[in-house]
Image (cartoon, rainbow, N blue to C red; front, side):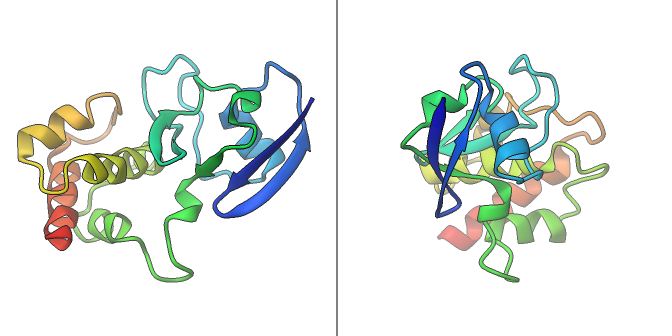
Length: 153
């Protein structure tokens, strides 16, 4: 089945099996490996991307469901060599350890700030509860999101 998706502003068309998950489409067909495969059960959030501006776990979406839609991955956030403010905040606040969850966490966090531009610490914690980090205590992740939010003000 042919699928046409605009990924990070670039139109891409590929033949895929009807049961192909969006996460596999992005990694294998589009060649964008920043979106990680964590669990394939929607439990961890490592595969979070934006579908038409909304945060989704790409292991829960079929590639055919994204046909004609716009997808933004972690690779699409930066402006060339200039990091997105959320990526910069994660860097400055040391909001990662192994980094496996980081792309999905950053994508979920940017979506959270789109919905709540100046969240409280509690709103950040609730907003990111669908994204798991097995290395940190989330303190620096929350700190990074709040720092990025300060730039929104």
